[in-house]
Image (cartoon, rainbow, N blue to C red):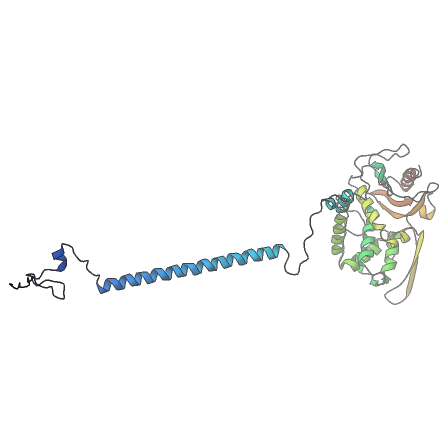
Length: 385
């Protein structure tokens, strides 16, 4: 039996590099190419890019979380404030019935008080059969209790007030002065126009504010008015500023003062209605009516050398002195007179009827004192009707 020899492979074995003995690669033999591996620098660049992307994602995630925390905190704070804080009481639930409870009363309480609510308002002239003022005169008769205008003629006409000015001077003395103060009469206080009504003080005399006020209202003393103005205002000019300011507060739109006594000045004027406003305000000072009801006043004071002086001064209101007679059941409670050539004879009164109701009556520009009191009496006769 013949022994067969093993068949030898004629192909050369491949070396470790994957190439055959003839120098061809295995892939070449098999007909495919093996992919080439990236270089070391490219791998490092790819790794760095991946790391940057991871860091960016982490950073964006952290920013998103922080934004959510801020938004949640702001929302919580808003709710906290809307509820009034930690220590606030719980809000009451809405109750429709409370909105309509006592509606009318609530509206009345919330309504602001009108300026003229407590005033007599004159809108036109009002006639009375028993009253007849001359064409150049003006006057009013007003019911303070019922706020009714019983008579009006030229209520807003410009008139010269003469010594009715002293109503304002007296109010400021009571409002800002101390009645116990001692006032030294200055030369300016006694340097007044010739024929001016004066109490007879001399420069250097010592008089109290209370005495000056009595001389002012009872006797209408111009030297007393000047002394009060200088003492209360510091100077006469400052006091006049106070007069105009207070008049404006009272609503006296037709009034302008230039002095404290009413001596004639073209720029010193008022209206009958403004006099009503001033006299009505003066009634808030009990001392005013106490003094203006006096038929006379005796003032005792000292001269600059220490010697005593005194004078008895009669009231300028003829109803108080008995020179004129008020109508039956009419009580004169006070007021002020005024007389100059330009102003004529003037009188503003507070009076009371038989039923205790108060009235203000004003007559401006009468040709004489007799005519003045006749016209005033004709007005007062209507307050008991």
